[in-house]
Image (cartoon, rainbow, N blue to C red; front, side, top):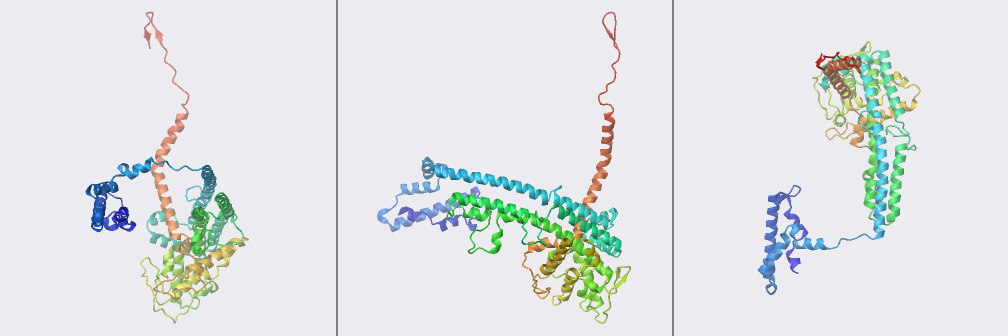
Length: 524
């Protein structure tokens, strides 16, 4: 009865560590601790006074009150309750439970060994560190791509620190390159060959990149992971019993929820098994999406340079002024757009009141666009038109929906599977990136053909912006050359000294003759 009246309820105990006490969620300082003890002791004393008033025949005397306070506030090592508990004999597992613990430990150790081996495999294939398959492919492809752009080291050095300057440099380079058929053929063929080489190094039967795959074909990584986790689950269930609930949390965490009731579909993906699957796929998917984005941007420039309206169905009914704006916007998003730009529907350099009387086509001179209305500049003012969805929809159509050029299609050669992947990449980009909901422009969508997706999927689908890829390449190349300029002379001197010293290895000067006098003294 005394305990029930004196010991605070759980809710009351939590208030001692509440935010108002200044210690909840933070490290408890000595001052916090002292204040908490004072508050706690004060409350206990108040409860004892109330108890004595309510129970005059069973009052707690002062000596007992003092012992109660000491009992409740004493440090752990001096607390009588703690000391009594420490003298109690610890529980001992029986032979059955000992065997169960040993078996569980063996299962976990065996499983950890398999996971470690899988870690090494995934790291070798798609890790971010140098000398992995994916990193080597990335470096080789970007190096080839920048060299084919015919950008000089001096231009790279001048623009490496400014993204806007890099974008403008790429605009000019791609305008010149895509205007000439031989140059365009070389860069597209080289880029496609690099993607084919990546496919050869990391086959679809190993890791599915998620862009265009046969749903009936399960890659080796999926098969191996399924087998690993299935074996783990089977062993756990076998030793604990199918109806045992003790291991449900562990299995949910490792394999995925085994009970379908009241579990959101997305939560079923949050298991260790699915995290292993997604890591490799997303790494490969984002890199390959970047390469496809490069190719799609090249194709956009080339379709404009050819001037054939069959490649630009989305804009052929527009007045010339809007055609020029959409063409420039389409080129720009290929070079520098992020997912946020698709969300806000492309702030664009545009005239809210274009000339609708001029319905002529864009003028081309030697494959290069000559604008009548649009003036490209880094300082071009960008505006938002919240009630005009036309610019966004037409830009998405020109970039991702209109057919690719015959020259781009021929560059794939006989590899129809890769060509279909590229077309599916464009289709998914159009349907996923084009259906973002934007509160200020809800009608700016490409239609109701949205594909279920997440922000992370759209981020990986878009890949890296070309201007960032080239800018990072320029910084790395510049820093490498600078490092070599600083240390190469010292290295050359060191190399020369090393080579020269080799000619003297194992050789010593001949000793000087020594003569002795009759008295035994030495004369040099």
